[in-house]
Length: 234
Image 1 (cartoon, rainbow, N blue to C red):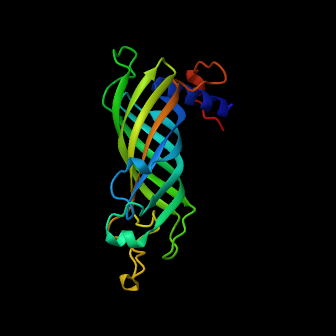
Image 2: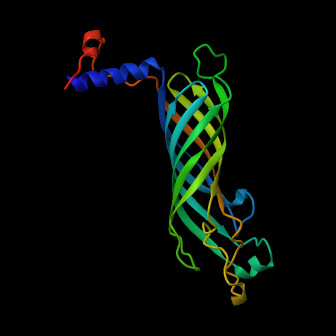
């Protein structure tokens, strides 16, 4: 009996707050910037996929949990300096990122009386990236690294049950070995070194589609009984 009452209270509580959740996925492109490539190069885009689960706490604020998987590559095929030309290094890794970000929507596009069904938004959060396939020539390193996801996007409601979005996000890392190149003993003259004071970054640009659930369905109809709610179930 106690579990039945708690489940009913949970369902009615969620509905009363008018919170709703979304889940979905999408696809896009990953890019990298570090010791091998400076800045954002369109020619270096690699495919990636994503999935997400979002909770909307108000018209403007959402909490989004996301999983992104894809490849990151880079090389000295277009050397950034003379040393890079001699170094002739390259890398190719697979990464899986798990993140949690807060999204802020600039317009109240979800309200049923709103004349618009779209809004730009910004996001910021924390995450962890697991790296696969890295062949580091200068020693070993932790394959799980913390990242800070941040970026901007645009969402559009499609009817009442779907939401489409496009997003561009930066991922700030706190290490310099995403591309397996970092500082080394330059006296060895093997050119396998980079700038240890310039941590690597990567980016994700993606399209997504969400399915919207406006309430959590309860398995049975329930009308709260005041006397039952005051009782102490053991």
